[in-house]
Length: 207
Image 1 (cartoon, rainbow, N blue to C red):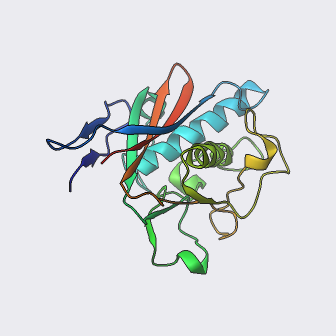
Image 2 (cartoon, one colour):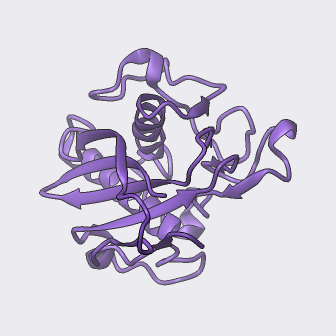
């Protein structure tokens, strides 16, 4: 690989290593959201926040289905990243539309259910993952990437997200998914930074 992008554990430091002579990473977009205002009720807010951070841990593969959940580790501050080569597509989960079958380079590796450790607010297990998908949707759009979210989230408000940018996620429905395709000529990286109860998502061109 011309550029090595290492996925790291939550609470570790992001490592981006470029070979001699390569250009430095170029920021394409950056968005930031508070994890403290996901819902007005504190308990429900914490469920949303935990499910967001747990999804990021699954992206990073620091947690896999069946692993015991250490919430202290999940909630720890840190950075993780994933990369997409030109033409590669990320899907939020693995139930994908026919046109994307065989073309998905990676997903969150999660299905947002109780078996995977996702928390319930008393109504739904996995509440909060739609917020993360919406954050990623905005970041990808701002970066000029090809983005498709077939089902919007107009049935409920997502704080700090415009109604048009809300993404509905359900792991068994191909239409309730998020698809991000790298339409650039170089590899891009999604970098997730959790600090001070905020989540920042930066999209960079890395080679």
